[in-house]
Length: 183
Image 1 (cartoon, rainbow, N blue to C red):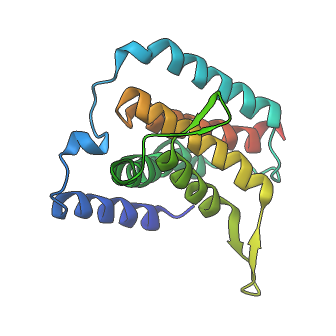
Image 2 (image 1 turned 90 degrees about the horizontal axis):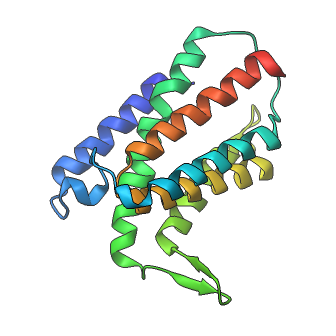
Image 3 (image 1 turned 90 degrees about the vertical axis):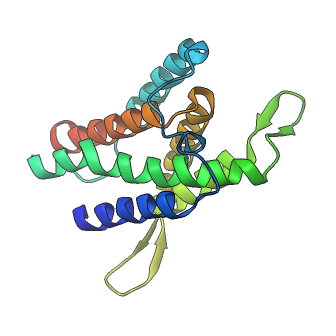
């Protein structure tokens, strides 16, 4: 939990948006309007995502109830990470990469979503311990990579980070509640 770090990160993202004049705000998916045609698909994806959370369970140690941690998870990480990963990074990478490449005959992969998801997974799975050694948690990487890819896909479908932001904060809140009450 790092309130000040996340707030600084949001400020840096906003400064970037103000200073970089290459795109319009809507090009960064910073809009309240949603692509309504994809509504059913997004609802199905979101439902599957939350079922996956429940099935995967919680691999962390239980913690006591903490209103500050719960409030933090309900607000700041989603704003910071969606603005940076699905807003700025996804937008810029979508402009330089091809829209998709095929894996086999059926699966289409968006390289911009793939890169942002790998970075999102890495930032959530690399840790420095007390001896200043770098540790990698493969379980955290897989879960957050899949979560990031799903949020990126929803961002592209809806042309907005609003729904991914809500889903992200809901996901974090559910995981925090699991840690506090269900473990």
